[in-house]
Length: 153
Image (cartoon, rainbow, N blue to C red):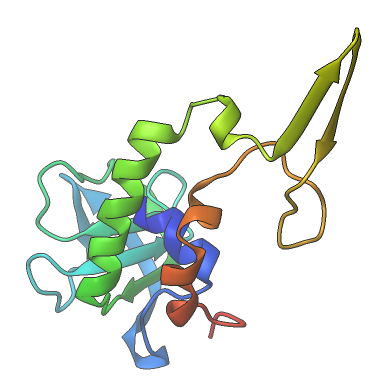
C-alpha cells in the first residue's frame, strides 16, 4: 500500500543523497551489494524486473524475489510515522470498503416516479471528470495533502 500512497503523493520521503544508483542483484532475498540501512527502514527499488516498489528492511513478509543483476536505484526513505499510520488506516479502509458498490459509496443521485427514473452524477474527480465510485484517495485527501509534492526530485 505504501508504494501506491507514495506514488500518489509524488513523495518518497528521501533526499538526493539518499539514492544509490548502480548495478544490483537480489540474492537470497537481499540486495547485493548491501548498503547502510536500519532494520525497519523503508526503501524504494527502481529498475528491477521483479522488485520495483517500496519495501521495509528486515520485514520477513516483504522478501525480495531473487533475480539477475539489474541497473537501477535504491532510495533510502525517511517515512514519517504519521504517514505510516495513515497507510495503515488506508489499508484498513480499503480492506473494508474497497470492493463495495453500494448506494452510499456511489457519487450518483437517483430519482424515480411514475415509471420514470433518472440518475445524475454529483461527484467529480480532481481532474473534473465524474467518477464512478469513491476511493481511498478521496476519503483520505485531507490527511494526504500535507505530504503531497508537486514533482518527484
